[in-house]
Length: 81
Image 1 (tube, rainbow, N blue to C red):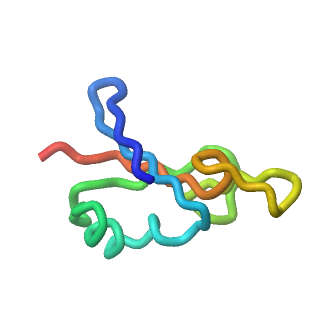
Image 2: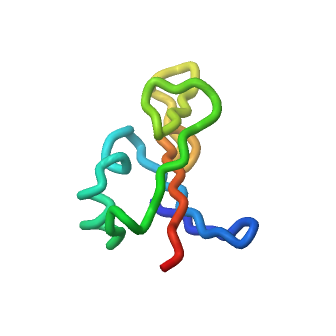
């Protein structure tokens, strides 16, 4: 899922995946969202993560899943051209 939003005059994209991996690949972003490599910038999470620039959210019980809550989140700043 891709969530687009504006904040402080800047445009962002928050990508949710049920499993971390695809949002960190520039080729995937181009193929699925039409984003060229020079049209965005990854925003790394401030808190520690083993999967930067994505942040993983899990419930304590591994089999629990909730769409748009548990999974991997990747924040991207869209460049204005």
